[in-house]
Image 1 (cartoon, rainbow, N blue to C red):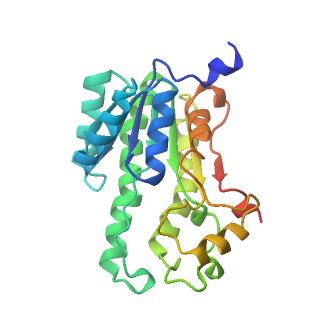
Image 2: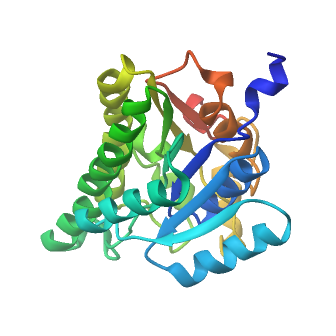
Length: 261
C-alpha cells in the first residue's frame, strides 16, 4: 500500500460525539474528507443537522444522531442505531464534553458530580459500548479528546489583566483521567486489534478572547499562537487511519509546544 493510501478512511464508519463545537467541527470535517462515513452525535440534534447538511452539500457523507452521554440507555440506543444503519463502527472519537461548573472551584459538590457523571462515567460507557463492537470485528480505532489541561496545572499568568481564569477542577480532573483511561483501554482491547489513543489540544482562538490573554498565551507556546480551525485535522486522520496501525496507548499533544515549554 502506498503511504498516502494508508491515511485514507474510505469504506470506514466513524462516530464522533459532540461534533458541533470548536474542535468537534474540524474533527468531523477531517474524517469525512478522508472518506469516512461520519456520524456525529450529541444532545443538540438541531445544530448537528445543520452541520451535517453543510457537509453533505459538499458531497461528504455526514449524518446526525441524537444521544445523551449522561444516560447509558441513550448511549446503547446510539450504538444500536449506528449498527442498524451502517453495520459496523471502525472509528470512535470521544469528543463530547459538558462544562456545568460555571462557578469554578467554589461551585457546589452536586455540580462537580454532574460533570463526572457525563465526562467520566459517560465516556467509559460510550467507549465500552462501541469498543466491544470493534473487538468483535477485531479492528478499530478509539480516539479520546483530552486537553493540555489534563497534562499540566493551570497557569494563572496567561489570564492576567482579564476576567478569565483556569480554576475549573472538574475539567482538569477528567481530562487528566482520560489520558490514563486511554492506556487502560489500549491494554484491554489490544489483543483484539482495537487501538486507543488520546489527542490533547491546546487553546483554540476565538474572537471573544481579550488581547491580553492572546498575547500571554501565545508567548507561552513555541509557535506563538493559539489553535485554529484546521490544526487537529491531520492528527485525527492519522490516529483514525491505518497510518497509525502500530500506535496505541499514546497521548499526542497538539498545542504549538505549550506543554513542552
